[in-house]
Amino acid sequence: MELSNQTDQVPLEDIVMQVQQGDKEMHDYLLKSSQPFMVKIVSQVCKRYIDPLRDDEFSIGLSAFNEAIFLYSPAKGSSFLSFAKLIVSRKVIDYIRYNARRQHIVSFDQTYDEETMENPAEISAVIEQYQDEQLALNRREETLEYHQKLEEYNLSLLELTEIAPKHRNTRETSVQIARMLIKDEELREYVKTKKKLPIKKMESRVPVSKKTLERNRKYILAMFIIFDENYLYLKEYIKEG
Image (cartoon, rainbow, N blue to C red):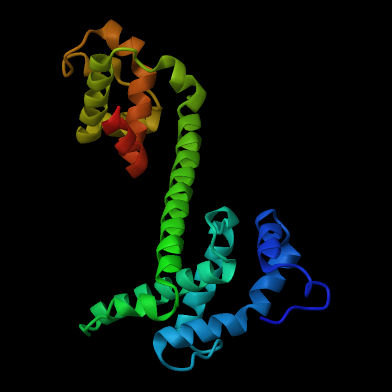
């Protein structure tokens, strides 16, 4: 990849770090100067020349390259280009396979993943890094969204650590009550609209007293939000708890 006079002495990994820290000018430079690299990788995967102005595969590769910029971590040991090469290749392959399934065409063979990288050990390390980073990114995004939803109910993550029932049985019962609210269309709509529990309507439908409901109402609401928004990672956390 050719670099301008201002950056030809700067390691590529350092440029990536600058972009991650919010340098928009360097971000634009990196995307523009990396186009030949992306064209080469996408063309290798597609086994034909890819025109950046005409082929959808290039747009997929560009999006994947941009994703790689923000997922990359030098602590994992691989170079940025090796990491980006894998991410771009896998995203384009996924796109091709998706279209092939839609057209009832035989999908690409798994060996395409290996064809774009030379070192099997590097492939394994980069795949592991990508999966870890992607999982962490998804968890962060889900937690941030959950935090915003809690605010709509006048709740907070910090508050949840203080109000969570100490006894496992109480927690499990609260989770069951939240699930019941989700299944009951009338009660579910009430909670979503009023941002509170319909205590009176719930008394005859749950195996706990009104006092217990009121004491644990915030925790039940917090669990309700998780199920209502279908937060996959947070639901796993509930199972583990």
